[in-house]
Image 1 (spheres, rainbow, N blue to C red):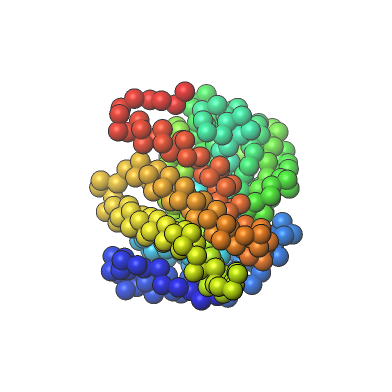
Image 2 (cartoon, one colour; image 1 turned 90 degrees about the horizontal axis):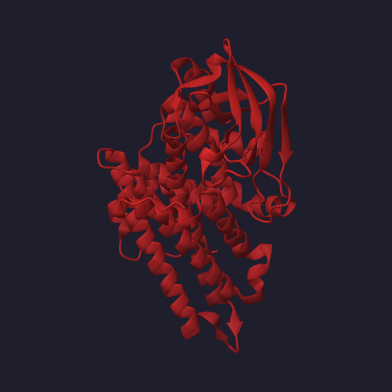
Length: 388
């Protein structure tokens, strides 16, 4: 497949030379390591575990973290990695951002030095896999409804409860668990070989099939107080982690949109219908122009948010909600239009379009659903809480 130029208004001028080099490097990695195997993993519902250490070797895991065997890259470079990985597959990007934006970031931001030194270097190298135990069956959009508890008993904690839809759970070595205590919500590092932990892998999903989702049950699981994240107190801690992964998702959605655009453009130029290339149709050209325009706008606003994130001073999580809302919505539209250009061919795994489309539908659900982003931004601009 020819990789058509999509930088229609020279947005690359907003990037530094080393950021463009990184994008090209990650793109080559995806073409070599992910694209040849991902369709079969999707069909089989399996995760390419052999990719994990390779992602670590390339320093793609925890790329935005300073120290602990991580690359310490800026926010835009981290986003570029997410974008290009999702050009390969949204499931692989979801694994990556669960590992670093959720699990590693929680330890990095809320852990002590002992915890950071124990876990982060191995996680960065892909030697330890983490998951993020926040969501429950009846506490998806509102974590305050969680029923998982952690009861203090001397210098121990006794954990009981169930988490669901937990990315990486079935292949994880540790879980960053969020539970209610007598003193509010707190975070814990729970090693997954503890007695009382049961994994219930979810096999019924028909999208994001190349990564592992499961439920986790905790029955009288005992951990030491030293496994508590000492600086994670209250709901703000897990929500800050969600901001990180939503930033990565916003970039990833651009990657999926770019891939669908390229696939549709290549197909339309090569496919002959009624003696003419499909691309010669006015309707098809309109779809392609709309795709390219939305990708261009998404890239522009996401680079800007990335730069604000790098500066830090005026960065707000509502900015991430805006680019996540825009990029995921437009990526879904682009994937659907690409499928229309493909016609019946678009529902085959070989076309890759249906895989990206279905992946985006699931990401739309698990990353926060568009309505939640709207309510976050609406509260910010009006001052009124509308979460009811």
